[in-house]
Image (cartoon, rainbow, N blue to C red; front, side, top):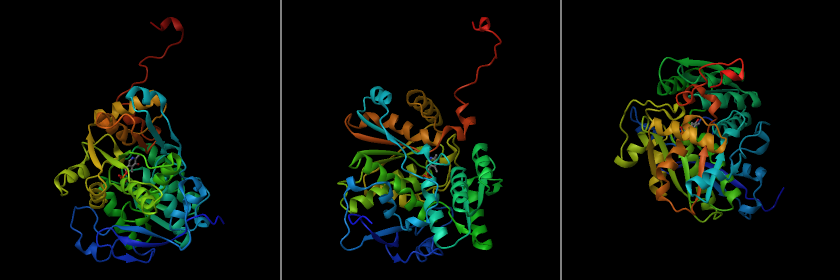
Length: 406
Ligand SMILES: *Cc1c(COP(=O)(O)O)cnc(C)c1O
């Protein structure tokens, strides 16, 4: 074992009341703060993982390798499934750098995860935790990617996965889940209905809930992206653009940088820009107004289409505390950003993932040309070709010989 490594003890801490708890598979949200839960509002009493370094341990960014990053997660390495998750490329998109005049633009490409979305980071930790505690069944609601992710990572871990998703979820995400062998239940309703049904299912019929935000390990698993970014840059970036629906990726990105900042491994928490679709912008609205109001959501970016962002309160709290910002972009902006990203970088993303890039396009004149900027790319375009077809069309006619080409 490397003696330079940080080793930690782990607890849960309530993001509302700061009470601490021992980590326990039965504990999901803070028992006292959840009593204040109002109907149709984001979750109260979201728990985060609190790291305490054990005496004598220390590390520096340049010493962190892939294996060491797992030490920052609250399950021992031996419990993680064999499938490789994370350690995705952070790369320099030269064409885009030139086009936008941003010298230090980076793309963090999480489409390279095994099930082709960022969600694998959360599923990986949840699967390891379930294995450690001999939990054989996992239940969750999803717009599509969390489902296919948990199905795939669950398959690698030998865990049975039951998923609830809207019947309108992109077919590729349903097919993925079926291929991985999950028990797929489609809901005649939206994601918010699927969320409620999955919680009712896990509380009455059993199963470990991986619902995003509700299960504290979802935020914690997602933090690994920030550890990798800081390690690869050997510092904190200036800006990170994050596509935002429930606000759990956002929370994970913050958590990773906050952990590194608390350990004095980076000198600041980056400015994080939460980018939403105008058709599903509850966090953006609450960031401006101070409270969450209900509005039926509808957007081409299905993965960020939520009426009630489960991690809403916590997301706004982080954004306020660390000087973050929010942006809402239109579906047209999203689709044209998706196309521009593909045609200038070779990266085909789903609309939700392109939303982060649309946010950068909307915001780029407000940042310095030298700023170190990371755009988080969260899901692959092949998961939702129907949306991509809204802006490109296959050739109308097939030819037999070249003379037919006008
Ligand atoms: C889930 C998801 C998001 C948004 O994550 P939240 O935690 O809901 O904010 C963004 N992009 C993709 C591709 C996703 O699957």
